[in-house]
Each structure stands twice: as structure tokens, then as C-alpha cells.
Length: 136
Image 1 (cartoon, rainbow, N blue to C red):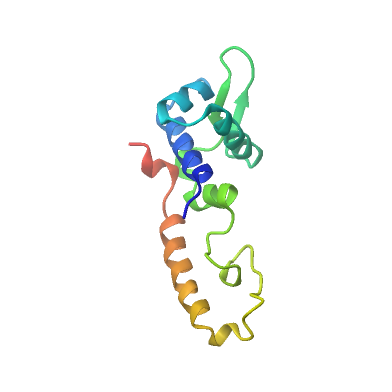
Image 2 (image 1 turned 120 degrees about the vertical axis):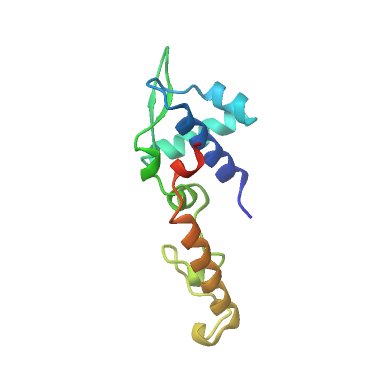
């Protein structure tokens, strides 16, 4: 299940992208419009800024803005930054692989095989959707 952190991060990024403004968008505006706790949103936007999705401006007229064009921001990358692995099990993760302690043979494991299919289907959607797809 997607965490609230990731859900709110996607909503905030979409809100900023829809604004298409020359000036940064204030946290309070995003929080009010998207019904997100401002304190929680601050930490989410900070994570997105530290990972190269957003820029920020302090002071009067300050707020957050997209660093890249929405068409160049892939949904899978936002989810990985906020949520972690897309795979449901560490033994099928492409970026965060770990062997399962209770599985002697991954190749013969029915759960492993099923979760590879789930991961691949999920990635097919998330890697082919950008922030621009949600800004209309």
C-alpha cells in the first residue's frame, strides 16, 4: 500500500506542475488546496528538494518550484525517493535487492516468480507515466 508520504508527495508535485507559474508556490497554498498537514508537507517537499525534483526560494515570494519539466519527471522516480523500493519483496527489487532469509532457492520459489511479474507490471506503468500526464 502506498504511504501517505508518497501519496501527498505526488499530489504536491502535481499541484506545483499544474500551476505553471513563474514564481514559487507556497507550502501553505499546496497544503490548503490538497488538504495536507503543512508540517508533514514541509518534510516531504524537503526530501523532494534534496533529491533534485524541486528548487526552493526563501523569504517573501518564496516557496517551491519544479527543477525539471513535468514531462521529464517519471512517476517511478518520485515513488522510489519517497517510498523506497517499488518491488513488494526485497528479493525481486532491482535497486534494493536483498536475499530472503527463509528462501533457499529463489529460482524455484513460487512467491519470487509471482512478485517478479507484479514488479514488472507495476514498473511498466510507473516508468511510462510522467508528471505531465497528470497536469491537465
